[in-house]
Length: 173
Ligand code: 5GP
Image (cartoon, rainbow, N blue to C red; front, side):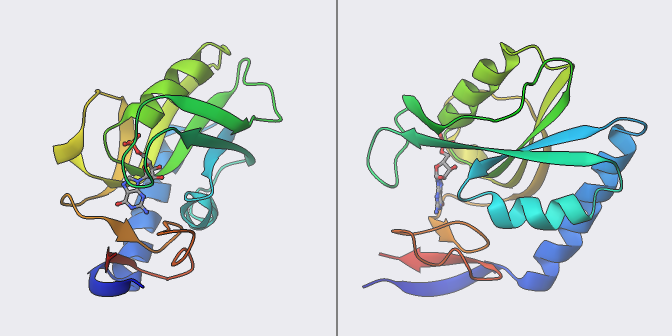
């Protein structure tokens, strides 16, 4: 069993910040069509909220990756479980992530997608744990910096549970 011990970011705060992020992205990509690339499954809820706050023509595509290692530690060796369906050639691509921890997963994804010749490639994440970073990844938009705690909710899971919580919480395994 596990239990929620603390709410770290409540629902209203999440929604307000995501609205701001959407407005910033709308300005940054003015006149362009965006391809939002969501990383399954964690980024799904953030992507669906963010996409509605971006006032630009946009399409979605999804990737699923698995990082070898234990469920709470990333190893940096990333396997693509589901690849994108669309070509990135000449597109303005924004990778949408739930959380950056060590940065190893995104470092791999960023380099991998860059090799497909997008017109531009940026990263946007809902949460960031800067104290845990092992590699420097070029993140353009960050929702919230959080301390080194294992969090769930708003797409993030613990053993596949808690993804549907409408807030970010700390869980005690
Ligand atoms: P990184 O490669 O940056 O270390 O790890 C990124 C991935 O690790 C995230 O996409 C997420 O799947 C997982 N992860 C890292 N920290 C947490 C956390 O606090 N909670 C949950 N649920 N997943 C996390």
